Image (tube, rainbow over all chains, first blue to last red):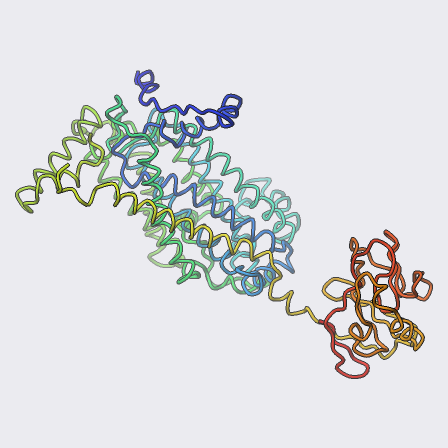
Length: 441
Length: 178
């Protein structure tokens, strides 16, 4: 329905002469870019700062690839050489410490950005029709990221690397009948060793580029139906949008600046804050560290794995925790996208977020005493949220009225802001207008 | 336009654009330096950049090849005749004029990097059975450069004499190269 109007929201095609025109006639790359992130891509004018996190994830991926290429050039993927080569990178290679700290903390921030991106989707219902496949592509990238991050963590071949690899690969041993054979095949031997290390090195390098390729497909799917927005309603006409460039390129760059500040603070002032000191001990196949934990970004999943007191059951719960996300567009039965207009779902969203944080806390604590119970309760709630609450609330809840269009909602909000400001602060009308107009013309 | 929206005119915006652009450009340029510098020799590579060689076994008229920074270094114990020949040469006849006194700290010992200055091959002349070229020093088989008993180029396409590395005698029988 809106698809046809969509085609003519903007008329900012680039016309080129001379050499660029010659190229464009044969390979229309300049308009392709302009249609993707330029003056001809219509963006809902009301997207808030949570819409920065998609481009931030892209930038985080680029940083990982650039620093990773440098690290790979100095790294030795052998059981005898890996740990020493990482120490050599830290001590001897020029700026090696910078590349390694940037890569390790870059991975953490990449996950932070992607998790905010994901929860943004859950809050504003961005996964709903017609963006289900877009959501799926994002989830596939998340699973690939988890895999890539795990393999990367094994490469320094410290105690956490070695025993993390042992614990996680042993999950596959839970498979009925073929479990033991599968482990032999995975390890290429009788235990985690150099064959696995080299395989992980190869895949770690490869998967980064698979993710990069999927990111392009993800953006392609995004542009088919455009960005969602905090109101969760469709673009109805030119009054609802602004061209991506310069309005959102500048906004994204501003977000990137903030991101770099956080990144620099971590890399230069607290580079080991998020890491485990045990990984500075070389891998010892004859001794397990007292307390094995994954990096913070995998802790909630680790808690779900440990919540089930059965080897196979834990693995299944872990897999389902990710797979259930694929079904969310259909489990959520509400036709309204944004939680802004869903009074009950809005509460559930925050409870669910708290639940995931609790799982993370439990995942990082020793599996003893109350943590076992809390972890099990939080795991049950994780699935109840998706499998029970989401379908029921969508049917029972009565959403508050949706605005007619993005433009009318924006104008009304501006009017309210102005009305609030005028009597209290008593500023001049023109100043107040300047502060709140934000593209309302 | 009235005087009121002073802070919002073109010049302020231009200033912000230029300041932001300049800051980002400098930042990006600074950030590329580690990417370049990481390819330079690392601290451990530089740390093993010198080599000590025991030369007590080398008899007059014989030579030895050692590996220093991944390259061959020729250490030759010259006979009085060879020294005599190297010092008798008229500097005007040389392509790359250098006095033998400037190339050998002790006349008896000639220490040079064994890489032909033409295209990087290793000249022959260390082993007794090797051809030593027309001038009794080294001969590069790749493109026929001849070096004399001071390892100066005398014939063939090589532009310069064989390089003399930095070295010092720690004792009469121990030399430190690099």
